[in-house]
Amino acid sequence: MALNKSALLSAYRKMSEIREFEDRLHEENATGDIPGFIHLYSGQEAIAVGVCENLNDTDYIGSTHRGHGHCIAKGCDLDGMMAEIFGKNDGLCHGKGGSMHIADLSVGMLGANAIVGGAPSLAIGAALSAKTLGNGGVAASFTGDGGSNQGTVFEAMNMAVVLELPIVFVIENNGFGEATGRDYAVGTPSIAGRAASFGMPATTVDGTDFFEVHEAAREAVERARRGGGPSTIEAVAHRWHGHFEGDAQLYRTADQVAELRRTQDPLVKFRAKVDGKKVTAKELDAIDAEARERVDVAVTKARAAEYPPLTNLLTDVYVSY
Image (cartoon, rainbow, N blue to C red; front, side, top):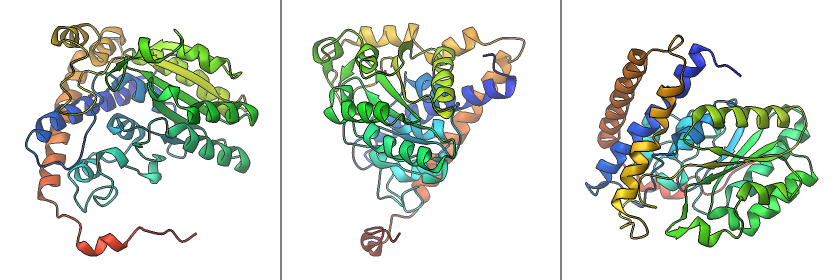
């Protein structure tokens, strides 16, 4: 389905913001001012945006430890995200979540999740709620190729098929489960094929091609909204950075990473495929400049913000329903 100019600019803006956000965190992390681990999403921008551009604020997503891209794609505030990663009180979770646990239910972000393969079992809950309430809502879960081996993922897929839940399982195949190659750790040549064995539609797409991801997600989300049940999308796109910041990446060479950056850049591919009659290079250049400025502002605000007071240790411990 052809996208109009507004939709194209929105998609590119989010992809550019993810890239600038992650590139800046790569620099800021080296200063030692960011507590905890961070896992960067660079190289996979087209997956999160391609999926989330088909979702509403009232739809839900479940994320992974590599969740910054999912957050931005779903509409989380950049300032609040940056403050959260710096551990500040102005953060989306008041500095208590950090990089691996950012959540914002106001835009349907159930949270980044350090439990490998943890998102599907949470997202089917959101999908079951939507089906029970009959509100037309859809859930999507993101899981890596390594996480796709978890039993909880299999259980969630089976339950989604049995209950005909409105959910899209997104498997981000970036080639490595931490440092273990996908070809070694996954006992099938097709993760999508394994998902299909549960009885749902499943497809594999180029995860560096926004348009390919978007079309697959559009079909899956529309199917879910009209009561057609779950689907799986396996999106192949290698991450550009290590598993975490500080990873020596002994499992691949610098030349291999350089080749990925040269030939598998989702933003470059978007520019090459977008209709020049709808969107010009000048407009995309302006978006890139705006994204850099937005991230600069977010870092400045995060550095100036206060850390949480000690009294916050006793808040958000229990929830009253």
